[in-house]
Length: 348
Image (tube, rainbow, N blue to C red; front, side, top):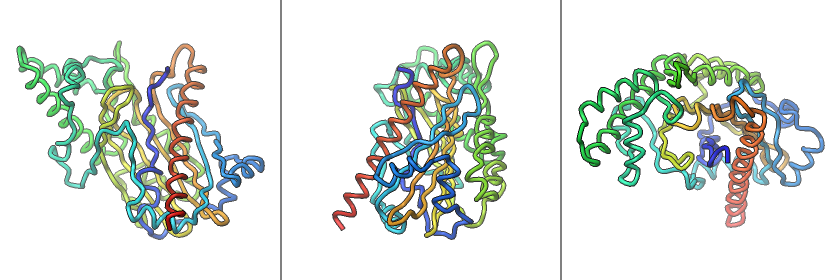
């Protein structure tokens, strides 16, 4: 298997799509949205019959996997907003270990719940001994700092090693958060790979934001602020930072996420970027939205994930397998959302 549950940031299960009922900028009509995503008459019929359909999302590099999905929920948009505002829709994904929001004044204590546990001592030791490569996504200075730390841990027992690894990882997460908040994409340090090579999540995320023309047409100020963060965001937007610890390919990994939302009665849009990922893939970029559609709501979202695993020899086959795995996971999550909404409507 190319991936073991590649982590996909599906905001529809977190309540982020319709975060606040603020005034939205100009939004497309459902017909415009469907046309923008190349969804034709046959697929529209499928959508209206409750099917989930895919649409093409262009990939920006050999390392990227991109896919878009759409569905129509038989629930009016205001009801979905109200449902999510009440906190009735929660993420119960089995691969999520823990997560927490990051306030504007976040410090090392903001990451105190991020930790390798006793059963993950081997992972903690591997982290402390990290070298350039794809086992961990770390910059050269971060790897050098780990080497300096190792020198102080000679003959240390497992308890001491675990404590040292957790503290060091928290420091790295904090420094990456502060660098991004200060300098945006330019503050994202590249990941050190073998033979002096690097992976550059900053360039990946910049390309993803630039190429997302459909949403940018209707939210140009939001796109420019997103590209040039920390340039101030539009007044009618809300943002959130958070860290996550998730099982990816059967290993715990830290993720730093930045989300921006604009939502109102006429529709909503959500954009998200994972600007640091501990291993397995480099970065992820999501654009999603919801629009009133007849007696229901048209929901669509696309995800772009960059990973070294699909580059090189056999890239075409790897991309095909990777997209299919992402598609299955996205469909499963949309089906779960649909089921939850129908259950709520029935109970009401």
